[in-house]
Length: 233
Image (cartoon, rainbow, N blue to C red; front, side, top):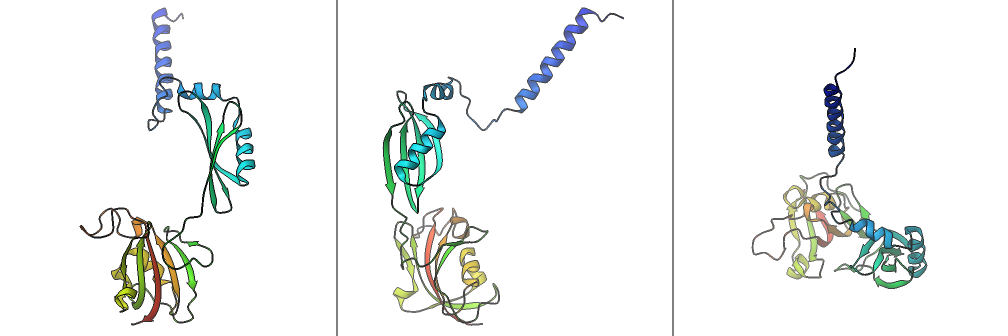
């Protein structure tokens, strides 16, 4: 039996529609479309490929590359590369046409306020970061219900001190479940006599809604030096 021509055309249209639907399903709708072919133009203008740019950046910085992005200012195309030599970050700009280093700016290691850092940073699954300045030899809190006595000082990353029991000359006492979650977790794993420097992400601190009019801005990373003096109960 012969299939009518109109039926064949209908089947072809259905097939085309299905293919178009599948193509649309594969589109990443979070990415702004490259309407003017800018990315293609950047790639075409780049005479130096990624491997060569990475090699040039590592030679210049003396470190290892962390990331590389092909960019253009409308006239020149370049590789913007971040490399680390030890704990020093280098922002390296490689000319994508010639392979020459146009810039290599080194950023020294970040300095945290408070007591000097001792030892290596440790990080928990929650994102809490701490340094053990002094490892305690006494008991550890039994859980969030424990009440502890501590001396502490707190800063913003820019060095602004916003609170300190040390400055007041009187230790603070509180149940661990009654403070920010970064303290509940961090102080809860200290031993009496220990001192720690905490770097607390906003979600474990005061988040987007700190006390109105207070010294802590929204979404602030907090730095605390804490000494665990006593487990009260």
